[in-house]
Amino acid sequence: ALQFLSKAHHCKVQAGGWEKEPGLFKEVIQRAINMGEVTISCSKKKSNPAEALQILSSTRLSLNSLATKAKQMHTDVATGQLHGELLDGVAALEQVLTELQELSATLRGPSQ
Image (cartoon, rainbow, N blue to C red; front, side, top):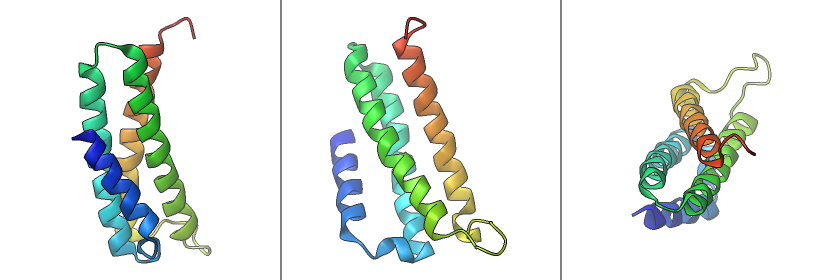
């Protein structure tokens, strides 16, 4: 299931045009949050920590890229505020990113 979500996200992002429209961007963010939550669930079920770290890292890169793009393209230059329609989505995306990072750190252990 995670592979399909990841592939769907990649296809949507590659299509172009969506990033200019806040409503479409919001949909992509919601799908990305879903992908992040599925990644967390799948990584917890992996018996091999290296495999878990790989899927966490891959999803984290995708989500981080999306959050950065949202901030670059939809921040009001005058106020420095993110477009209102994307505010909650980006905050939720950043929360999932934090969870992905914390889980990765736990899997790496104290030695790294």
